[in-house]
Amino acid sequence: MRLARLILCVLCVCAAAQTSRAQTPKTRVVIAADVLFDGRGRVIRNTRVVVEGSKIVAVDPKAGPVDYDLRGLTVMPGWIDAHVHITWSFDREGKNAGAGETTQEAAYRSASNAWLTLLAGFTTVQSVGSPTDVPLRDAIAQGSIPGPRLLTAVDPLFGQGEKTGTPDEIRAFVRRQKQAGADVLKIFASQSIRQGGGMTLSREQLGAACEEAKRQGLRAVVHAYKEAVRVASEVGCTQVEHGTMATDEDLKLLAARGTYLDPQAGLVIENYLANRERFLGTPGYTAEGFAAMERVLSLNHDLVRRASKTKGLKIVFGTDAVAGAHGRNAEEFIDRVRDGGVEPMAAMVSAQSLGAEALGLGDRIGSVAPGFEADIIALDGDPLRDITAVRRVRFVMKGGVVYKNVTRGRR
Image (cartoon, rainbow, N blue to C red):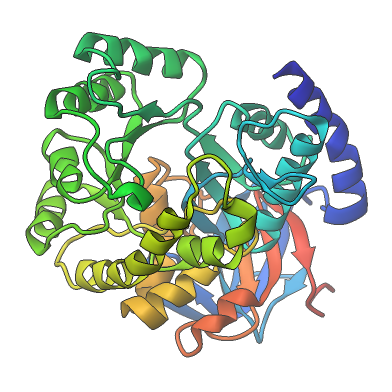
């Protein structure tokens, strides 16, 4: 852990100096926009955003002078990805190393993942999770290394039936995660979809985990398929991850109970299939598992279609980005709109104000409004007309610092 922290701190000198070219926030910066998405579903025309330090202080069409002229682009809050594995990478042989590798090279790759994700327009991500997330999170927060605002689960709770422990032992595990600095509790209540997705925790075990998380001030996000989706909501967990093979009644229950749903329409499986040989033979990845993923892709499309039609269901944006997907997170927007029938503006909001709400940060990020963090991005194109515009991020500001500006808009 100490080695990883040291490496990351050293790393930042090169990353920040050579690549990010991030600028120290000016006392006051004005951004001009002729199309601004406010993150809550509203489009504002011909206005200006005033930033002081790390915060937005006004949205005022008369503000000036203009420092960044982003007219001709679509301006909006930075995106939030509620489900990544930021330290997963491919090793020097090109094979999946997961998150367990703690070498110097692995630390460099993690820093690269963070940088690519930020440049892609994602200013906040939730990594669920690994202890190797912690030094990366802290280095980014300290400004030592460029990357998105990072939340982590540290060690997830893996459901293994009785081997997982008694409810009291599970509660003790949750308290240890809180002490280790977790921002959220990740629970595996189902097998991998590659193994069929069966439930791996009892109702009592899952209830104990989510109750204790709430008591400790942690949200509880649950890897759940099939019947685990319903049980997770019934026992009071915060959010369901994946949700494949949930019934319409399950989705209605989530909506009624205010449980967030984070489905994946395509990127994670598409990434696995594109990198099949790099994952095959590494722990958890078999030929049979890949055959299962090919079958599941259409089920995921179906789930997103049904979920998007479920009245009142809170659907957040999460990609499950692993090795090979970092920096390509926005492809999930395209999958959701093209294959899942999600309205483009709903897709944007799921990764902005709604995503912020799900993370417990709804009063801080996800909206362009006074008092919010100055996390602002701009796209070349209008995603409401052409969702592939999400691939063309031209401007990235996080906390008032500009990390990317490939426009002609700097005066």
